[in-house]
Image (cartoon, rainbow, N blue to C red):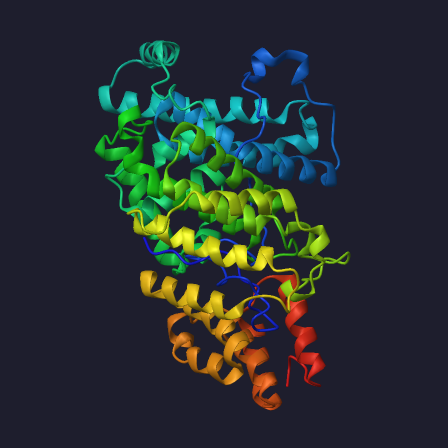
Length: 481
């Protein structure tokens, strides 16, 4: 799978960004709101067993219910799916059952009240849904009495053992299980982002730079194949973990990207997704130490994530890299990322993906260690992007390279590299946004205003829309001209 570098604030001051703008779409300064995070303490006790701890308070207002459901979605989605898949090995049923549980919560909690342990309530409801589906399937298949099937289902659940005990991290287990080699690589990534992170189809399509309808069809086929083919949905044996490592790394990369890539809505940044991606990589580095692809990606994400507190101002507006308060960057994470880079020898053979991440991390390190925006070595960054483009052929890398070249050699050189990118990235608002900024630099303000309007037609995130409107207004234009 071709990946593009994470993180690009390529939207306005061309060259103010530090990476190519969202990775296949990669990780970084695309700011976004993606549904749930991986991990979260959804209780494991069924409602009937949880007793008073789970008993709802009587009645709840609409805002209370909405807040509780949103919080449960963020903290519990992936854990609920993981628990159900671990117990029943049916990812198709697990996802549907959790979604049904949230729908039931939306119906019942306004009148019955929000449970004291929403995660346990949701888990109980989802388990019942899975068992109902399994009973129906068994009865149809074998035409046996329902009571016999119920006894078999209970015995099966009681006898279940954990085949993935060698992977201690629950979320990492689910990632490895989703990345089965019998499934096409892109479909593995998409299913994992859905099951583990809970991203919507639209969000995953945006990350992978594909049409939403096409991805939805692919995911449906993949889930049906999982259900019908007997593919073992389980953590591979210890000696086979490396076989899935590149795809697992790709998932972590895109999980991080989802925290920064704009999506429709108001929320501009999901720091928790970045935190979770880094946590998963640390667990992966402990499980499989000294793997180049893991170390390179961890270095990259640490360097990118180190700037999280300076990316937005107090009003939630985007702060471009050149204008960020560098004293708010996390120096310890920058130091750790740079130290990790020193352990990766460029002449030692590694996978193409590991080299891709290493070069992206070198770009991030140039930005993170520059004493000021003026001290940034744009010629070095442009050379790194040229190498990365030769590795990947990615149009998003070309976009980032155009920014770096414009800084190093002038706006006209950057504009030349943008040629053809509108066809390669037809739904990417940053192509016209970067072109607009470079046109401003060469004095073509009317053409720049036209490009800003085109970017506004494509942008979906409210924070970035506000930023682009401000850039257009500074030229004396308006979005409707």
